[in-house]
Image (cartoon, rainbow, N blue to C red; front, side, top):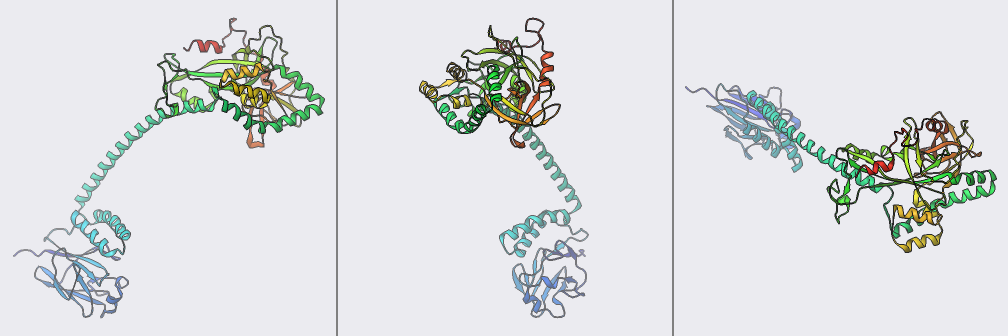
Length: 534
């Protein structure tokens, strides 16, 4: 005699969802009472099924040979595979619904002696039917399917299947991890290359323009004229009202230097300069706009600053970030990290109202303060040096700051209208040509602003005299005409306050300055750096 198969009821919905109930006995009750053999929750029944309850019974399963026969209680609604039945002999896989829209059960027969674990197809089938009968809309059915399937596979299948499933998932995750890591490495390489190109393009765009078109000149005048007019008017009023300020400004202007610089990059190994790729497409739209080969123009970053004559033999004081600008620019540092070395291509200065420029070279920079010493070729010209104050400044002391804030844009904005009209009529000028034109017209002169010292520390002097970029390196003077600090930084967060390096630091740097180049001087000049890089 063949052994009887094992019958089970699988709950596909309701509070017992996912449970498998093994059937024993010849007569089993389906209901809500405490004596029900196959219990369902009263709250899960639809209203019509709840009204049909008699003593908590909705139907009966009666053993018929190898399977069971389902019989509905009087007035109760039982559905098998989507059809309402009063009596039906069940087959393995039949879907039982207790009341239309009520709890859903699955009837299955398993071979004798076999544990009633679901196969993968059975688990998917149960989740699909559960979603179809338990969801009231597409989104709810999708949610039931997506959340139920992992639960069924993890809890209702055989242990062996679960182990194989875990192994398969681990392998998939490892493969995904490997692919992800490869993608990350590739993205990093692409990002590094893009950063190098974008950083250099940004650096070139952020510096002073290499060419000044007619529109640039007109825009510069209209844009900055209003911004500077108030400051100029204030200074002019102060000069006419206070004789001491006028005396200091007039006496020190001839010693303040307008600095122009341009630097580029060379390959650290070969010494070849970085050049533009010869193309009609703008650099920012090229994947690789720069090269070490070809005949394209050498890459140059333009900038301006301020310095002042500090000794009789032509030494100038300025900021380290003016003498070595690439050290203080994040985009320049990105280019340097890609294996390029910075070199000064050209460095020169102008004195107020003098037509001819002179070459400037870096001598030494401070490692503890934003200071540098430059040497200039003044030929036979005798320029009176500015004296450094021996005593420290005090809070409340009035100061005068001289410099060239916003560089040549401010010089154009302050020039005579007729001179600017002549420049516009003459067409575009490059960075160097515009400075030469301004100098020839007698329009290079520093801007003076007045303020009050707010704080003094061993490392800085804080004052509210107005200035901005381009004014870095200018002298901060007291009303005796002595330099109390070297203008270094703008601090807009402090209500327009600015920072200067105390004169005591500048004095110590001048004391340790090396002899002129050629007499055991270790400093590399700008011209040497440029000539050795091509």
